Image (cartoon, rainbow, N blue to C red; front, side):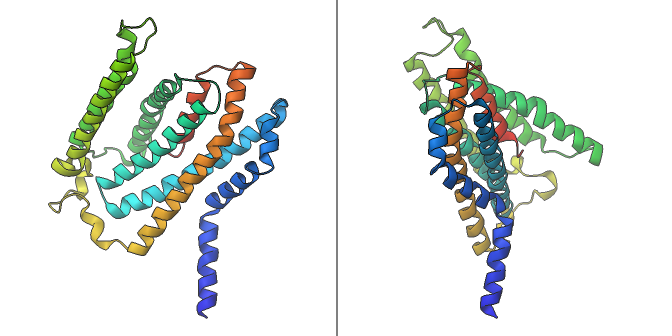
Length: 282
């Protein structure tokens, strides 16, 4: 009977992780016979089919990443939950950018293009859609204004430092930092974000919890009821899903770089594709 129950649990887990299994199967295909396909990208129709296949598999796995990250976030409580979700999204984004940048011709503007695309999609799309649908369903919504203000302040500051300020530097002809300036502003951005994390998780953690769940118990107040095996399972599946997305991005980057370098599509296309991929689950 115990063997039957164990088999039933494994079957249930396999069904619930169809996204991960499909992603792993795609990884196996593109790292075996798929290497031959990627070695000859002279057939536009087949390239489009492979791109659609990889994009769909990665998007499905990205939903899996956010599902497990969300489960871990709920168990840990705020503000740590939001931090877990942020780390998961940023890991996918940085990994995809690095893979695309280093798998073809140098593309130093890809991070900038990705950040611009992400900001436009988030501020004009995700945030606007969330506010509109929330208002239609719930009417008046309660938000933690102090937390929202803190988020907007840090996002605005980092965006100006990374995306706007290089336009006004005069040390080089191009709208970019010199190596020394880039190091200085990178350190300043890192220190600024570390300060924000201290505020978010220690000093003013109540600013980043929903108004109706703020208590005096401190950050992560709902962690007392965590079922540790379930938390570990979600954490392991989260890491596996992230690894699958990373492996798939290596194959996708070859097709994307071919489209940019050989076909002549806009260089910013890479940033837009990465931003759509990362933000789709949100």
